[in-house]
Image (tube, rainbow, N blue to C red):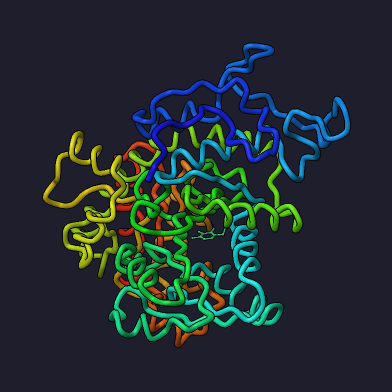
Length: 440
Ligand SMILES: *Cc1c(COP(=O)(O)O)cnc(C)c1O
């Protein structure tokens, strides 16, 4: 449940709370974009500056011992981090606490460390590669963590319940998964988890859809994590991560902050400032990413040079109905009001995967023939990127396992940017032609 009002300023986690002194209370009914722009971004009361200053000081003056304005040392708290955390808690609907980390991976490491020794978790089987590595190669050795990797898209209720052990502390979900964009039914997994006596927490890595398209906290998740490196910052110039927790997880929030401070997994003030600037246009960018991706997906779908297009927004996608049900309230409102429901489908983020007709040679020819789509890893920036999962992002997965996950040599992943849609469509078409010319 969202609180009735939000404070339009940093969510003070400091004991004296004075850094919220110039907060203005405004009704919470403001829309997503309004909150993204205003929450955590009050004009500076001393200078009138509309945009928060970058506060680089590592230490803070005390008026008497222990009497300060909410900040002591910048690892434990910094005005830019506080301000950005308030933005994050506001745009991830259902959130009350935001914790910004040095990277998505530092976020993952901190949450897994918080589980303590000899815990067990259940994770979606095609989890992000770095998450898989931390679970199976780092936490397994350092803290005896055991992970059951499950196909959470297709496993039935009994299988999921049977995987939960007395020491199962967490269920880790990513939806859609990477790179084959399989969709997990978050409310179903959350209700199974919460009905089990072990009551594991449910975490959703919401990086791919961003807080614009999906609100997992409204679907029963206990925690949402993001690699802010991707859509939230959105300009491919910051590495950062975040956790967002609902109001009833006060104690968990405090534990995680304690651990974060102890580990030092904190972002810089400058990165917080940049990522907050990025987040102010998240709604505009995500609408453009979604509209462009839908247009590109439709073109790919029509092309005889393409074997299969995977975009859950397409009405022909096998989980299109689940994709629709999983939309955040604000994305649903936007789709209903401004797009209507096209017969072909609806915007659902900016990621597309497709199988080009042919094999590795054709995929590589496509990837080196695009003019605007840059061949590169990562995703979520304003510029379009394309990559080859089997040889790049997912190259460390053994071939047999890759085959099971559907990551073949002809699979191409696109991060569709916000350039003019006609230019992107033309670029994809000419690169497909170039790939097809190989076998002429
Ligand atoms: C990139 C990514 C991460 C890791 O985040 P970093 O900021 O690169 O450390 C985690 N999960 C997903 C889904 C990602 O795409």
